[in-house]
Every structure is written in C-alpha cells, then in structure tokens.
Picture 1 (cartoon, rainbow, N blue to C red):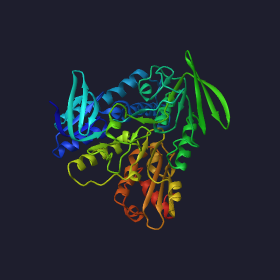
Picture 2: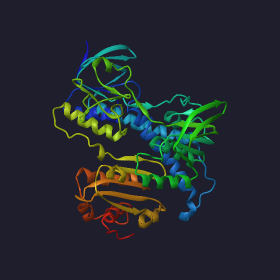
Picture 3: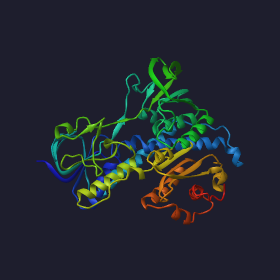
Picture 4: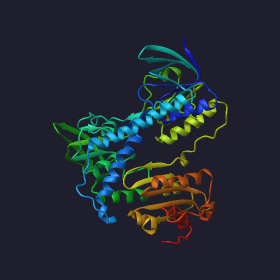
Amino acid sequence: MAQSFDMVVIGSGPGGYVCAIRGAQLGLKVAVIEREHLGGICLNWGCIPTKALLRSAEVFHLMHRAKEFGLSADKIGYDLGAVVQRSRGVAKQLAGGVGHLLKKNKVTVIMGEATLTAPGKLTVKTDKGSEEVTGKAIVLATGARARNLPGLEADGDLVWNYKHALQPPRMPKKLLVIGSGAIGIEFASFFNTLGADTTVVEVMDRVLPVEDAEISALAKKQFVKQGMKILEKATVKKLDRAPGKVTAHIERDGKTETQEFDTVISAVGIVGNVENLGLEKLGAKIDRTHVVTDEYCRTGVEGLYAIGDVAGAPWLAHKASHEGVMVAELIAGQHPHPIKPNSIPGCTYCNPQVASVGLTEEKAKAAGYEIKVGRFPFIGNGKAIALGEPEGLIKTVFDAKTGELLGAHMVGAEVTELIQGYVVGRTLETTEAELMETVFPHPTLSEMMHEATLSAYGRAIHF
C-alpha cells in the first residue's frame, strides 16, 4: 500500500529540507526523498565544506602576516589532510543537524531514488526494494552537478571537479583552474594561498564576469598581487593527459599555446539533475537541463513544483531556501510573495571577498536608468586599516530620479557579511534618504556602506 502525503519533496538540499520543514510547520504531512546525503550538495560538497577550507587558507595567510601585527610565528606550515578532515567534519556536523531538524518537525525521510510515474505518484527505489508514494503536491529539489565539457572531463586524478578539489589526493604544484565564476575562483584562491602556482583561464573578458566590471577589476588586481596568473578571453581547447602531467591547449587572441600543469580544476558551470525523474512523461518543460517554472516555481504540471538549482539561475543555496518556504506556503494555501531575482545577493568567498545585490552600473544604464553612483574605498575606513585590510571598495548605484537603491557591489574583507544591509534596504524599498539618515556604528566596516551612499550624492565625509 502506498504511503500518502500532502507534500513530497525530492531532494534534501537547502531548498528541499527548508521546504519540508516549513510545510510541516503549516500542518502538512510531509516526506523527503533523498538518494544520497541529507543536506544535499551544499552542506556535503558545496557551500559549507568550501568555506571551511577557505577559512584554513585565510588563517594560514594571516599567520604569514604576523609581523605586521607585532606578532611572531615561526615555521608556519599546514597539513593538507588535517585541513580537509576539518572541512569534512564541519560538513558532517551540519548534515547531521538537517536530520535532527527533519525528525523534530515530524518529516518522514525516505532514503532512495524517486521516479514520477503519474501526477502525484512516485516509485522510490530503496535498499529494501521499491515502494509507492503519493503526494498531493510534489516539489523537485534535486539540485545540480558539475558540467563536463568534451575533452575536459574530470577523472579525479589529473583533472578535478569540485568534489575532487574538496578532498584533494595531493597538493597541486602547478594548477590550472578553468572558469572564474564563484566555484573556480574560490578553489583558485584556496590552493594559491597554500602555495600552488595557479593559473585561471576565463572565456569572458574578465574574472567573476557576473559582477560589476569595476569590482571584477579590483578583485583581479588583488589576485595577481597574490601571484595568480589570470588569462581572460581565453579558452582551453583540449587537455593532453600523461602520467603526472596535463598539457593544456589554451586559445587566446586567435593563437593557441600549450602549458603543462600537474593538476586541473574544471569549474565551467553546472547542469540540473533532471534525468530519470519521469518529467518528460508528465509533460514538464526542460530547457538546457533545467526545469522551466513560473515566478512561483510552478512547472505547469498540476501539483508539481521545482526549486533551487534544478530550476535554474541564480544557483545559490539561499535562493533555493527562500523558494522552498514560498512553495510550502503556497501549497498550504497561503499567499506568499514571489522571489525578486534582483534582490538575491551573491557572495564569493575568495580573498578578497566579493558580494553584490541588484543591478551593476552597466546593467542599470542598459535598462535606461539615469543613475547616481557612489564609491567608498577601504583605505578611508578606520576599522579596515586597524584590521590590516585597506584594499577594497564599496559601490552603490541609485536611480537619480527616485532615489531607489538599484544595486550594491563590494570587494574586500568581510563584504559577504556586509551585503545583507543593502539587501534588507532593497526589500524595504529604501531610498538614499533612509540610508543617509541611518546611524552606523563606529568603528565598523559597515560605516563604508553609509559613506558609499553619501558619495553617490556628493556628500561623503571621509574621502
């Protein structure tokens, strides 16, 4: 006999487990089906373990700067195995927390692989065989995986994807990173800080291509200062693999050159996990490996929703979680607001950090806005100088006619924590007036957010 639920969530990543918990809070009978690890990619192989690795690299970097702070540290080194072990421990702790939260909220967890057989009906393959499950509403939260381009496929030995890079079998000596989006540049930052001779190849005209051009340029300047080699408007055409080495054929400016590396990390995007779910049979539309949805994550198939990475960009855990809450509330009969893509912040945890929300200066102009742009450098902030982090910039973009905050863009220490102030501002539909009148604490990095607003209107005090 089939188990019946009000809502069945396929996948337990941030979007999936949050959706399930919110549904249970609203009185729905909920099940989560997970084929591999509770917590999904983010907790086990993405956001969380990479941040643990990057924290180790950050501390290592600071130890080398001890003399600047009047301190001494001799024989500075690292144990790569121990660094990775700490990272895996952090991931395991949080994944275990997801299991606790689901149990606490009386969500049924079924470990297995789900296939949709008809609207509201699934077959789940488990260790004990197959079982039937029905749900009045079904939410796809199956996530995504690393894209493999022909000739650049990861093998876990010479060529790595993000999973291999999280559990490196060795420390690269000469590393090639293909792609300078968030995943690529974070791994480049980690291994470069630990001493790898690192080259980044980016097909677009700048690193971190989704960010504001001015922010990208400042980030690149710091990466190069740290010893990275950045090749922009370049393409890796093929990789020749031999014992212990890879020869990369890199095309740039119409010419192809070859370089040898001992390790390559391929970070050329992701593809949605849409296979073997039975979506085609139900008539769900799929566009370039992602399920097509409306602003409420509805697929067009009655009772079927898709959230998170499988539903397309932006591929961010916090976007997935927010969609999960929205969908659960929709299923429970409430009237939630749809997600506003331009109010979803993006964060990259390289050194220096990069964070942004809303329109870049270029996109605001292209959209026809008359704009006011404010800038404030870290060198003008007392807390940044005291921290020994004077390199960075906070940039704001306002609608000159209405004062609406159109976008904010940052590069520098701890900007991934600062960006939320502007995100709240956009949600509250703030104008420059409210931001100017807000009292920011001193001495803090957040004061730069105030100054960057004042700067847009010619009123900056400290620069």
